[in-house]
Length: 287
Image (cartoon, rainbow, N blue to C red):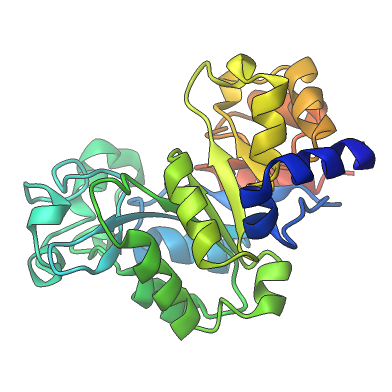
């Protein structure tokens, strides 16, 4: 396998240059990745959700989806519009940070989940990446997705700048996996590699995509990314084993039932994205 990898490296010089020292990490413990925070219990991508997953549940990673405002600020939001998760309307790219900060990002959760509603969720704000990193610090671990990077020119450069400002681009932080960058956009990941050869990257896969990847494509991907993020519904014992044979870390999304969590673990995944970090952590810690 090592000889084969060396042959691939010599063929694909671009990835040889950019992939540098990035290697897949073999986790002895499965990683608990809090999908949009503790989003099964609190409004996603708010401090109410992040505080619960990080401070109370002790998830290994805080997952942050990035969008960029009209004035170039990176914010935590899954959608390209504010409509679903706030009381506002419109595309993020057409709104300034000041305008987005006026929105209520928590009341919708109370309305949708009356059994989980809390008064403290009313008036939750949309946080910026800078605010998130300030709140949890450089010792926390962040799983960051560049969402719709084609919509936001300069997103990758701004992400690197903010991470560096918080001390998260230091070699020791990157080596220990304090920052993982994921994207469905291969172009965005290539750009991240060009900006920093040591940052660890994960290729997200669309539904039904994992079994379409050829050996050549997987070999090429391995020169760029250390991990693969497939839809959990696409995983089997066999294709998980195939991905692992290339040295990929495998983090499927979004696994929310105990049955599915146990099934993913039986396949040999390295951790999962889940809205219920407390449940997966309990399963991981079982004797």
